[in-house]
Amino acid sequence: MRSLRPDARQLGRLQELTDAALGHLELEQLLGALLERTRTLLDVDTCAILLLDAESNELVPRAAVGIEEKIGRGARIPLGKGFAGRVAAERRPVVLRDVDHADVMNPLLREEGIRSLLGVPLVVDGDVVGVLHVGSLDRRDFAPNEIELLQLAADRAAVAIVHARVFEAERAARAKLERVQAVTDIALAHLDLDELLPVLLPRIRDILSTDTCALLLLDEEHDELVARAAVGIEEEVEHGVRIPLGKGFAGRVAATGRPVVLDDVAEAEIVNPILVEKGIRSMLGVPLLVQARAIGVLHVGTLTPRQFSQDDEELLQLVAERVAVAIERGRLHEELVLLDELRTNFVGIASHELRTPAASVYGAIATVVERGAELPSDTREALLQIAYEQADRLSRLLDQLLDLSRLDSRRIRVSPKPIVLQRVLAKIAHDAVPPGTPLELDVPDDLAVIADPLVLDRVVSNLLVNAARHGRPPIVLAAEQRDRHIRISVADQGEGVPADVRPRLFERFERGVDAPGSGLGLVIARAYARAHGGDLVYDDADGGARFEVVIPRGGAT
Image: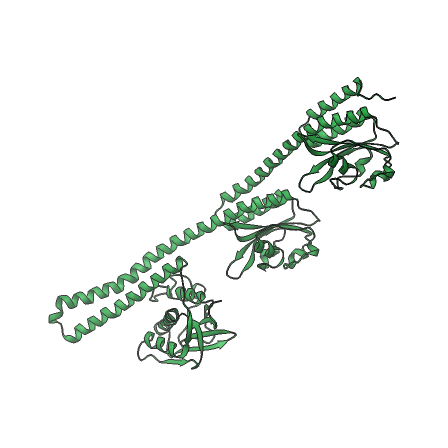
């Protein structure tokens, strides 16, 4: 007859088990030692520990010795279901004298010949953290002292397991922090994006043990993601891959602003065929966010199937946050450099452009004031005309500088209204083109558009003045409706824009050699056209210079 209480020998072995529990901080080593000594303590064939996943409320096999080593860690048992689930839910020992006739969720227990089971809960501070159970290949009636002994072992093991899990979590957090810090150090060491990304992406790939890593940045003007850098799938960049916002894997990440996991790429909506061609099986993507606004996407992939964990997702998002900060920091640095260049150019060109008309106005007026009485009347009128023309030039330049300040502060506003173009364009041409300059007006009488008349005047006047100043007559001012847009063109018969100037035609302060002007007119004109939802483009296909203002017929979209 078995004793109802653990004997001295068993208590001695229990102490050995406790020593084993307290002797290890690493969970894997701890569980291995606990299971071996528990099996010896109760003279059983199998011993297993299942730990509770608090998020899913499921028991997950974590370690086993004996026959259950073949079961593996894949099975997950819902709380309250089957043998182990019942032990955890009822928070008390459960004995199965005959496994063949019991509610057992895992069929492998029967297949491996386990006949009897004893399970006890692992409880710490009133919370169930798992289940410890032992099994026998022979039918066995576990005695009360054996049940008590296993519960005592479980109570001591539970505390050690919790401590080990805390240690494991702290170590994992420290490792994650070190990996993120490595990325942060790289990010902070580079201001130039072209220097940063080739160094950064391989590090991210290694941190997450993936085969590929790619970064796409948002082109806000076209609402598309553009592949900027990649490792493992360099073709994304070489082929200039562009993904519409909201479409495919990367487009969905950017549109939702949340991580997206693809366990099986073959079953997902993929816009980029390169991902399939490279044989990528699983992917994880996260948004690059700056002040809650997506500026791009960072994604990794594997050539073998992989279920990315919550930890993987959190780690990549942490990395993405650092990358986004680095990108924004680099962008701001580039803006500062550009603004400094613009300021230098502006001071030089603007001071020169302002000085010339201002000096002319002052000289003409000073001459009239100081010597007006002795000057012939026609000379006085000529000087006053010079003063007027140069004051007008000065006024136009000041208007351009004001427009430029609005452009820089993104405060361009338009007030569209219905306009009959024939009458409006005729007046603009009359005011802008010098008298006697041959001009052809080709505008249908009934052609109308919704646009800001003052802005339209500013844009078309600029084009006409340029044509009169730099081109050869006749100047042709035309308008037509095509593909739901109104197209207003200004063409001349001159030599056109020099080939070396065309790529920079719409950049600030760009002018041809010896060309007068501030180099701001076309920049401002295009900005106003785009404020209408349209554009300003250059075409020299037929000789001469031809600019076309494109505006949606119904106004800005």
